[in-house]
Length: 230
Ligand code: ADP
Ligand code: ADP
Image (tube, rainbow, N blue to C red):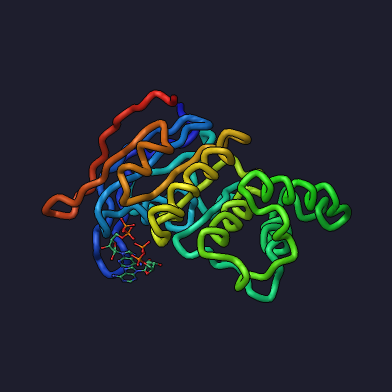
């Protein structure tokens, strides 16, 4: 059994809308997967099912061989909007997940030093060295998104979920961020699921691309395309 498995997953929202139907997916540990498809085809919904934020109406998601029954820990997330807190410095924002992580919060409270060091290293690896004490409004959109990627990784999650984290950036900044993402991925090799509209982005970053489409009847299906990593 693969690290993440979706078997025959369907999800119907409370209003009756069938957002995902009959999806099967197998994701290996450390695999970088891209989910591409038009707006509204159910990509974010699928992320919610895998992370346990939404129980499927049918079928099941398993992670590490265990059926997902509620929000699972050990996930890092980044979204289109970086959602950094303006009253905290950049370093404090990146350290935030440690305050709630079941695996880390105890150790972090007792001895934050190694975590602060790790945050500085993450920041340096994506070109944010020197901005530890800066505030959100002092950073460009691209830099804020770099910080949000560091925040998503600070608690060393096994799974990283990225919901269009580069979509709001200009084309030039976006490609710089792809490089930063590549560096972050290669340093830890988490299992990554990236939702994107951008096929070039998917090709650049991922090992495997699944396309989701909305057919009449709102049925989502997936197809596997595999690329060798350069
Ligand atoms: P994508 O991420 O591919 O853009 P989503 O998974 O966000 O698609 O949404 C899939 C479909 O389900 C969309 O038509 C969306 O409007 C609908 N949807 C999403 N969330 C809800 C919800 N909470 N209640 C009802 N419909 C929803
Ligand atoms: P995304 O930009 O990731 O596709 P959406 O704009 O579809 O996200 O959804 C944003 C939020 O609104 C989500 O929490 C989703 O569950 C909710 N939502 C989306 N569509 C609907 C809908 N038709 N009814 C109720 N909630 C919805």
